[in-house]
Image 1 (cartoon, helix red, strand yellow):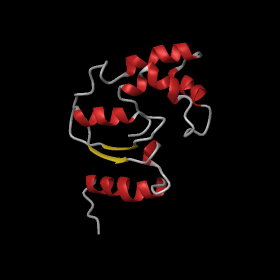
Image 2: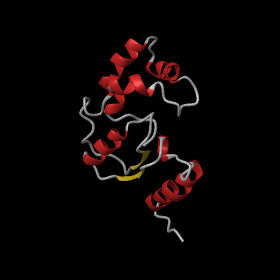
Image 3: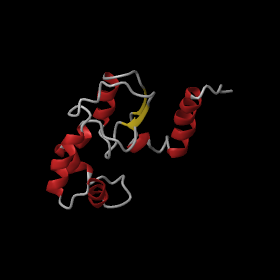
Image 4: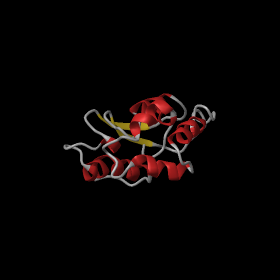
Amino acid sequence: MHGVGIHHYYQPEWQQTAVLSPEYLFDLFPARAVVYDVETMEEFLAYGPRLSLVARGLIDQPSAPMLLVNGEKDTQQPISDLYLLMKRGDPKLAWVNPEGGHMGRSEKWPDARVRDEVVQPWLLRQLGIELN
């Protein structure tokens, strides 16, 4: 799961702390303000909830196969969204690093290891490519 909120992500309570995330390389509010086409924090916080997959009635709709990747300590995407998505809709597979931040990253699980040991094998299985 990357870059896409499910429900909790869009709630003002989450966003007020998430925009202060030390995991993002830049000031997060200006980046998100551009995406949402808003100028103020108040506009941003008011806009988000209507994008919730729960509020839009989409969370239980059929979906393509999904691999959800996250860390319990993610400050950009709430882990609660991953668990909500796992309980609703079509079956999914999840990998959660209990010590990881965004995308499950940690000292033991840097980007390359997550990609090589979690994401690529799953993707190859989805494509019907046998792993050796």
